[in-house]
Amino acid sequence: MSGATPPAAQSATEFDAHDQLRHLRDEFHIPKPPNSQGLQITGSDLQQQAIYLCGNSLGLQPKGTRALLWEELDVWADRGVYGHHLHPNSRPWIEIDECVSEEMAKIVGAYRSEIAVMGTLTSNLHFLMAAFYRPTDLRYKIIVEDKAFPSDYYAIESQVLWHGLDSSDAIISISPRPGQYTLDTDDILKVIEEHGSSVAMVLLPGVQYYTGQLFEMEKITKYAKKHDIIVGWDLAHAVGNVELSLHDWQVDFAVWCSYKYLNSGPGGIAGIFVHESRSDQGRLTGWWGHDRASRFKMENNFVAIPGAGGFQHSNPSVLATVCLLGSLKVFAQTTMKVIREKSIHLTGYLEELLLADEETAKFYEIITPKNPSERGAQLSLLFKDGIMDTVFRKLELAGIIADKRDPDVIRIAPAPLYNSYEDVFKFSQKLREAVLEASGAVKP
Image 1 (cartoon, rainbow, N blue to C red):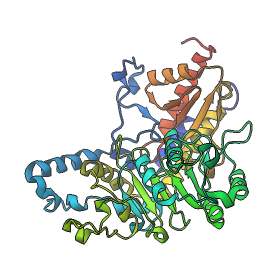
Image 2 (cartoon, rainbow, N blue to C red):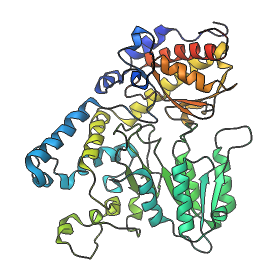
Image 3 (cartoon, rainbow, N blue to C red):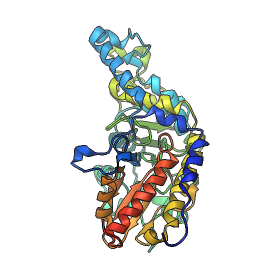
């Protein structure tokens, strides 16, 4: 290997030995290499477990989840409708969201009354925009990022059109500076300053899905609110990934999904945050947001549950909620502070390995911010010379499960709850082999 020598394999062993979260890896099912896709996996050491670095897309299944699901299926089978009130495991379905709300509030830095577990990400975004986006003749614009996740943009644009506005005028999209891949906070603040008197809302991601950039949420929120602008955050890639203090930051509202770093399973139940100062905000209503004590009186006089609970609509899926519970039981064994500390070190170790190999590093660029405080548990590699697809395929064949974004980016996300330093080291070795083969430097 030419160039600088990467950290030795012993470093991974030492890091794992001192990792205070290492025992939590045993709480998760680690998938086998993806033979089901018709891939011919090579290497006997990869036959038992894949190297899973795709938690930014779908988190792994906690081992405790299956038992929780079976318990609810048994209650349904044995008790039928009585499971709503007479539950043998003290999880009456009529209050099922209560079993996850307290831990969820800790993860996002909120009061219990400020969060609700409900719905799905984009539907929740629509519901909260219906509550908070109240355009006037003077204030009607929404500040977004130009590369927002498409579902967010669809929701925002449709809300603007719903109000009879011109999206090309009402939506202000912020792009990175020429030659850069991430947004500069100063540029965001500058746009807020320039358009402040006409802006109704700032709606940005906590962590950008493509680059892994962690936005300065507290600073941006504070600055926007000085201009009397409503601030909302999409935390799909931030929740369970980075430390959040939504209440203290005075965020107006936030939405998130739970199947990425929160490991609730594909299509898992989502969540919302509404700051206590906004709990009386007008909103679209449904019966699950009605006062619990009088909900079943079936009267057509809506009395909202105080706080975010009053924004709920329908009773949450019991099965989806206990899937989230399975993961939150793991989160409850540690803190977001400890998770974040490992994440910074683990992602930094990955970066060190990738940059040290000068022979292969010339074929890709890390477009995620170098500053650990400006990124989550993700590094996005932008490949050159059109080799991304070939590299990705070779990684799959080597038992690496990662994520790609056409035309040229592979996203690598070492999740601190279940990824080890050994995972990261082995990945770096397999990436080296894949890049050298794909670039023609060596024959496969």
